[in-house]
Structures are given as C-alpha cells and as structure tokens.
Amino acid sequence: MLEVKPWDVHGVGYVDVTVAFKDRSVETARLGGESVPFGLQAGDPVLVSKAVNMIVAIRRP
Figure (cartoon, rainbow, N blue to C red):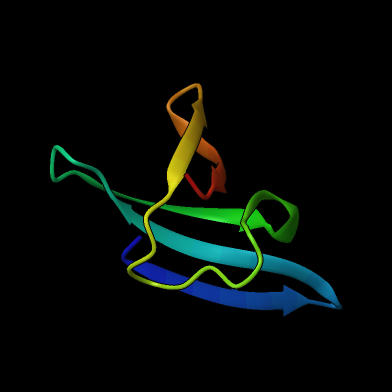
C-alpha cells in the first residue's frame, strides 16, 4: 500500500488508495469505506480484489 486518503461526501466515507504490486505496477482506486480495512495505512501489506480489471476491495492478508 503506497497511499491511503480517507475523505467523505455529506457524511458518506470514501478512501482513495494507491497500491503497488509485486510486478512494480501501480494502481489507484476510489473505494467505499466498507471495502477497505479500518485503520489501513501506507506501507501496510494488503490483498487486492479486482473485477473487470478494477480494484473493488482491499483486505489484510
């Protein structure tokens, strides 16, 4: 995990995340708070779930 930026719109929480993969590719996604573990920080190892080539959820290993 390279970057985690929580923010909200009218009380609805979102998280912008930037993830670096083992092949050195980097992806950014905007996820709902329910799709990201509480307390996630830059540098944490994560498992990424993708659908149709888009990040849809992140969890701890």
